[in-house]
Structures are given as structure tokens and as C-alpha cells.
Length: 202
Image (cartoon, rainbow, N blue to C red; front, side, top):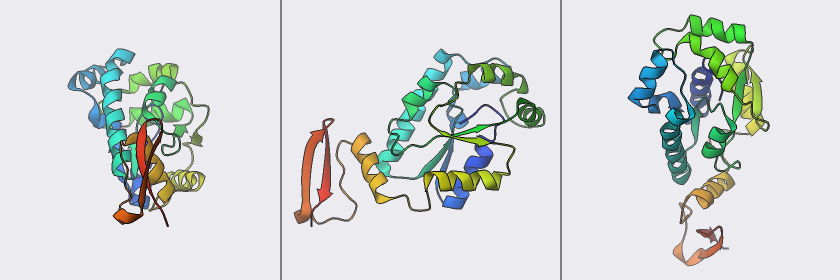
């Protein structure tokens, strides 16, 4: 997460490449009306963002259900936005890219073929509510360094731990069955938040 020009797409794509994970850019899910507004140099309101955020929430839920490791580049400037998107802190981790405003402005001034105008940085910085419990990264460091910091801080690799897959399915799916199981070794429980889940017994 971070304001425009903080390097979300650059770092996200590099991290996804290193890990062999799926990459998603939240900007690709904005409505034509939102894109037109931002292209005109006008900041989006909470009302403008709500359909976009709910689309991303649906995408995240589907990703967790499918157990597909994904890097999502998203501004997520306000705490309320992050609360909507990060439904399960056990599976969803936030890295906040931040740095000097002059550096970010310089990047925006020299960025080409992007719908967001450089003049929006001031309003984005005013809107930003820095997360209290997240990994905060200084974007003056090289991209490769930032990627390694994210990997080491979240202990993630090309194959996310199985327990995380299980928790993702438990929180976001009505029924979870491990991918390789024998029907005779499955017991089903239904006592956690009304969700059903299955575990393999010895």
C-alpha cells in the first residue's frame, strides 16, 4: 500500500516474480468514471471508492478460497479501506511503502502513460492514514532490498505454509476440504463462526 508514486506496482511485480506468485494491480479495477475523474486531476471521494473497494474485497475472498498466493498493489490509504480488504490478518499482510514527498513527486512528474496526475499527491498525503500494525518500508532503498525485506519479514516463499492455506479457507469458505485426502479419514466440525471445515485424522 501507499500513495501514488510510492512504487507499489514496481515492488509488487518484482516480489511476485521472485516468489512465482500472482500479481494484481488494484488500479485495473477502477470504474471508467473513476479513471476519468483521476485523469482530470480530481481526487476520488469515499463514495467514489466504495464500489472499487468492494470489487477488490470480492477478489481477495476468491483468492483466499482458491488458495492462490497473490500480491495486490493497492493504495488502501484509509484504515477503513484496509479493514474492509484485510479480512484475515493471519493470511493477509500489509507492506506500507513510504518516503520523502519530494522523491515521490519527482517520480510522478516523470511518470508517463499513467492515468493519475502528479497534482494528486498532495490530496493523497492528506488522505493517508498510516497503518499502525504493518511493515513500513523506506522507498529510498533499492527495489531488490525492499523485496527481500518483505520476504524475510513475512517469512514468505514460493510455497506459503499449509496452515495459512487452511486458515484462509476456514475464514472465507463455507466448506474446506484439503486437496489430497481420503474420505475415510475426514472429520467435519462446525463450531467456529458458523463455518464448516474438515481436518484429516491419523
